[in-house]
Amino acid sequence: MQAIENIEYKTSAFLFAGVGGATAGAMRSQVEYGGKVYKFKVLCAIDSDRVACRNHDLITGEKTAVQMDLFKRWQYVAWHGHEPPAEWQEVTPWDIWQAFKQQVPFFLFLSPPCKGLSGLLPQGKADSDKYQALNYLTVHGLEITLQACLEYGGRLPAVIQLENVPRITSRGKSLLQQIKKLLKRYGYAVSIRADHNLGEIGGLGQNRVRFLIKARHESQVPNVIYYPEKKPLKSIGDVIGSLPAPGDTEAGGPLHKLPRLQWKTWMRLALIPAGGDWRDLNKVDWQNLRVIHEPRRGAFEVADWEKPSRAVTSTAGPGRSNGVTAVSDPRLQINGDGKTNLFRVQSSADPATCVTGAAGPNQGAANISDPNLTDRNGRHPGVYRIVRADEPAPCVTGTRFGSGAIAVADPRVNTKLHPDSYGVQDWDSTAKTVRSANRIMQAAGSVSDPRVPDRPGRYTDQFRMQAVDGPAATVTGSTDVQNGAQLIADPRIKSAPRADTMGVLEWDQPSKTVIGSADVHAAAVAVSDPRIPSDDERGVWTIISQDGTRHRPLTTYELAMIQSFPQYLPDGRPFQLEGCSDAKAREYIGNAVPPDAAEAMGNVILLAAAQADAGITFEMSWDPVWVAPEEDQIPAMVH
Image 1 (cartoon, one colour):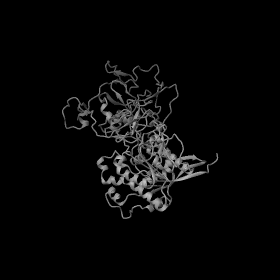
Image 2: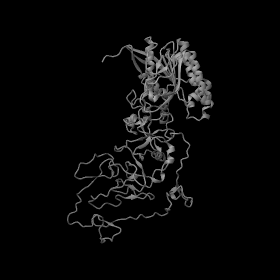
Image 3: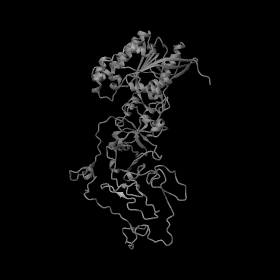
Image 4: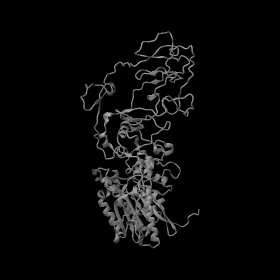
C-alpha cells in the first residue's frame, strides 16, 4: 500500500481544552478533496487545570497542552475569594501568541466553563459574582485570542467554534450579545443555535444537546460550511456490551471499578424500573417484596462418582459455587454385618430407638432432627420488629434497634431531588447526557445490565428482589461460612471425629481456643452470624431486579466510552485519567466534548477549507448548510 504524501495540514488551537475530547476528535478528522488529504495540526490546547493538561497529552498522545489561567484579576478575586499570589499575572495577547507557536490557527475551538450557565446550578448561585466572573471567560477568552492573532499575526482564524450548555441562551444572554457583536465586527458569518445534538452528529450512545456558535471568516472561507450528517444513536448496550465486566480493573483499568454504595442505595436501584428514577420508588409495592439469598449454580454441589469433575478452583469450598467440593462417595465401608442404626437420624415425633452405649453416630449413637430453637436469655420478642406504616405502634421503649426498639416500613420518599436522580437507564436505549456530576444520586448514572455474572469468584454477596406471592428473579452470589454458607453432612466418616469438629460458635459468646489446624473439619471455626447489611453499610452487591436485570451504577470507564473516548490510550493501557480522584475523573469526562462528535464537526470544517483552497465559492448540494454567507442566511435544509 502506497503511503499518502500529499497531505495538507490546517492548524488548530483549543481554549479551555480540558482532558482533550475536542482535540482528540479533531486529530482524527480527515477529508480527501482535489487529490489532497486534509488534516488538522494542533498548535496548542490551553487550560488552567494542571491535571487536565497532563491527561490531555496522555489521551491525545501529543504534548500540546499549555497550562494558562485566562482569568483577569477581578475574575480571579471573585472566583477564589482572595487576591492572587504575588507570582500570578494576567495573561496577555503576547502569551497567547507564544502558546500558538507564533502562528494564527486556521481553526479555533473554545469550550469555556459552563457551571454558572448550567440548569443544574440554582439561580441564586448562578447570579452571584463568583459565577458571573466564571461566565465572563466566554467573552474574555475569545477577545484576547482574536487580539493576539490580529496584533502579532496580522490575520484572524478562518473558522471559530464555541461550545457550551443550551441554558447559556437565557443565563448568558448578555454574553452572547457581546460575542456576536465582536465576531460581526471582525467580519465573520455567524450561526448561533442551542439545539445541536452531539449524539446524532457523532453517532454516540447518548443524547447530548449542546449550544454551538460557528463563525466563518468570509474573506478566507467564502463558501458555505455544511452541517455534519446525522447518524443513528446507539443504545447503552451497543456501547458497553463488549467492554470488560464492571469491576474488572485489570482489563478495564482503574476507572472500571464499581463504587461501594450504601446498601439502601443498592436496594433503591433494584426497585426502580429501567428508564425510571427516584420518583418511581413511590409506586413500589413494598409490602409484597423481600430480600432473599440464593447462591449461584454449583453451591453445595455434590459431584457424581461415575462422572468427570467440574474444574478445580483455588477457592473451592462448600457453598462457594466456584468449584467442585463434594462427591457422592459409595465407599461407606459398611458390610452386611453392620448395624441398622448407623448414622440414623430419628424424627422428633416418633419414639426413640433403644439407647445404647455407642460413642458416635457411626457406631450407633442416636441422632434427632430437632425442630426446636431455644430462646436466648434476655432476648425480647420485639427485636428487629418491623411495624407497618398503617397500624398502631407497640409500646415505645428505651432500647436500641437490635434490642427491641421498633422500626417502621415507611413507604414515603420525600427527598427533593433532580429528575433522573437514582435514574436507571434501559440497556437497549440510548443514554441520557453524561454530566460532569454523574453520581447516581444526581443523574441517571445506572443501567439495567442484563449480563448476570456467572464467572467464578467475580462477585460476592449477591442478592435479588422477590415478591412474597411468587418468585420474581434469581439472586446470584458466592458465599462462605463467614456469611451464611452451610456445611454438608459428609457420610464418609471412617473414625470418630474429635470434639468441636464442625462446631458452630454462638455470636454472643466468646470463641473457643484458636488452634493451629483450625478448619471446619477439625475445630469450631464457624459462627452463627446474625448480621445483614445495615442501610448505610457500603459495599458492592449484585441485585437482580424484578425485570431480570442487574441495576448497577455505570463505572467511570463506561461513562468515558459513552462519551466516545478511546478504549485504549496511545500507550496501550486501558483508558484512564491520572492524578485525580474518581469523582474528579467523572467531572472531566462529563465536561468533555465527545471525540466522535468533534471528529464529525472537524470533517465539515476541513471540507470547507479544501473547497476554499480550490476556489469553489458555490455548488449545488442537498446537504444542509451550517454557516451560509451573511446575506444568504437560510434555514438548514432537511433531507
